[in-house]
Length: 320
Image 1 (spheres, helix red, strand yellow):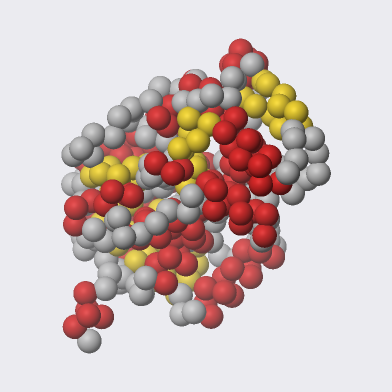
Image 2 (cartoon, one colour; image 1 turned 60 degrees about the horizontal axis):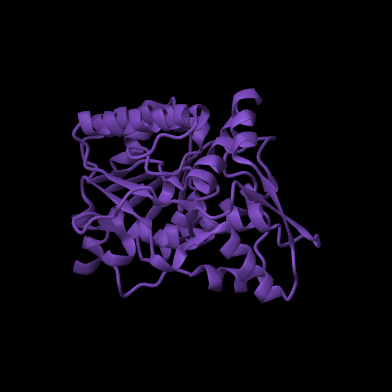
């Protein structure tokens, strides 16, 4: 019983979303009493979301249905947990201010992990559409700091399965693969299941309190050309590499209407500028694979094997 008393109770906002479901599954697998705050179901709720809720309820996850405007309901939910993790999609980034207000009112939360899970917004300056989005994330970070809420900010870099689908289109029998820029910039691709596991670990780790944790294992640093070559080696096929020049992406970022201009700006940041690798991880910085050497990130090589043997379904846009 003493051990149970030490296990943190976790509430996840956006727990039925793209990365949220992996965080929820990891929380349960690591033994944490877990609940989700999610929108009520309705005619617009898709079958996959409904099935996910059935899966979660079957393993004892409490799903609290409510809107982010329901302050008192959120406060009541927060009073029953220790750690709050937000996995809200980017259109809802500023809605996290409502979560912050509720955390202040509840007064008992030991750690808040806001919805970052991407680029390190305090260290890069991408094209204006992506920069505008990152500025919203910075606003959330600064609000958390100003409220003196114990936090962990996570820089998870790329969702690997999503970007493998985007870059390689492994489900489709074609002979062309698009390369953004010169294809030489290094990116960091981390498997979504791993992001879920490490997020639960760092949310409970005293070392990560009021710190930024970056997920940058050496085995997951790869360029587009290296990724394509590895895929060619595994499939025994050869692909024509069709390059999209940097100036084309810049022009699209300037001419496409919002929010369509954001994904091309993200592609430019990651695969042309190499923003994910543009800064050094210093000795006193927190990096997940160094923090937990006993755990192993899924390597890019292993991820491509997964696509060959049991391919994940193409993800809906992680930018939604």
